Image (cartoon, rainbow, N blue to C red):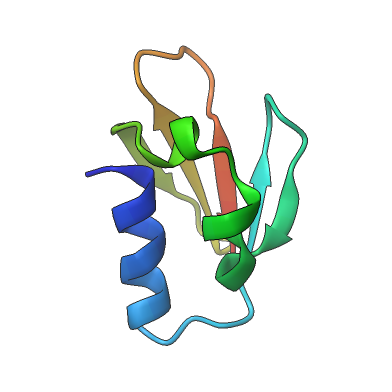
Length: 74
């Protein structure tokens, strides 16, 4: 699944107060603003791994990166 599709799915589920933070690009925005705030080349990358933590954070790895690229905080 591409990052763009994942974010759209979360929005379709009615999440409106979540935030997205990029670790490599220092972008921090609301989930609803993420589709315009994140770089297009990042939005079109495949999610390689997704890990949901008990504290409401979901870490996302894009491509073959060894470290998480983004975290979505509920």
